[in-house]
Image (cartoon, rainbow, N blue to C red; front, side, top):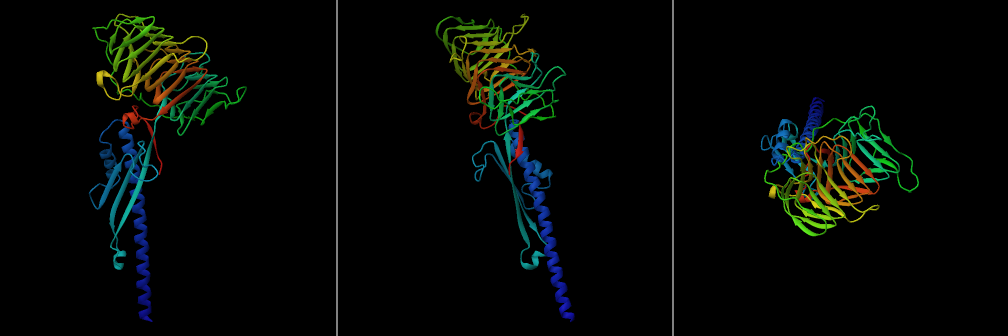
Length: 422
């Protein structure tokens, strides 16, 4: 009887110990998963902020969560893009794997003195194509205002402003539609918007999809890290052509640029332009180009770019530009247009496009002035985006995209959003 009792007690203690080991291993697995989640998200965040040591930063955060690479049987591996599985080759996804050899107490009695626990996390960058910085002064009011128009984006929209009592964050009406695919629409708020929900006349879906998330946290300028160019005192003779084919080169233009009935090629580099740029029934193309608009020290006001085709339908006249991928000739990687930060115009009469076609790779950075598009098509080669004070679009369908493969898969914007996807 005593022997049976002893055998029973030993068996009970063994299974109890095994259960305790299993519980401790599960607790350790959860902690390792948390460390992997943190490492993946931190690496994604640091990489979108142009930190070349993003993998080191991810491992440092895993260490803060109790798992230091190369210590206590821990291995931390972080890669971008993943090399296998669902997200293999996806440059927007960061994979973190944390592994640890863990000693056990009671499993050792069964010759299993150590167990290997591993956890993997995937964090995906959700790039933002449209970033609205301020309120509009137009009537009807709206920081983002669309009428009889469609805007399709496969990346996020961030309305980084809180409309005042007589203004709106979003004004989507008169058969207008805003669609964001695979991402989100965030608005600092409050909810003072006009979003039409009535489908009429043209057979299309009217309104906005997905529904905006209000009450988002205000964020800083995502291109604030970019150094503003300066206007050289040695100015290039400013071109003013009324016909023919022409080529111009990068540099400072102090008295404006005008093209009418012309075909123009812009050589690669940074163009610092005071006095504005006027393109009338002309076609302007360029690769590796950044246009920076400012004013001379004695000028009373800033002048924008205006692009106009013949009334009254969209034509192929317009602007076809690709932003630089490097800083050769002063170009700003990922930025195709840049308005002087001191140019403050909260109305929508800033950069103006009428009856034209615009195709760009690169962000339009107009942090304190607006973008006005009337019957103008905006599209992309691989990627484009807007960081602007306010936006007005009438007629046509415009497109925004986020294929940053020419920039090594990394968006030019800081403060991108990201989510754990697995």
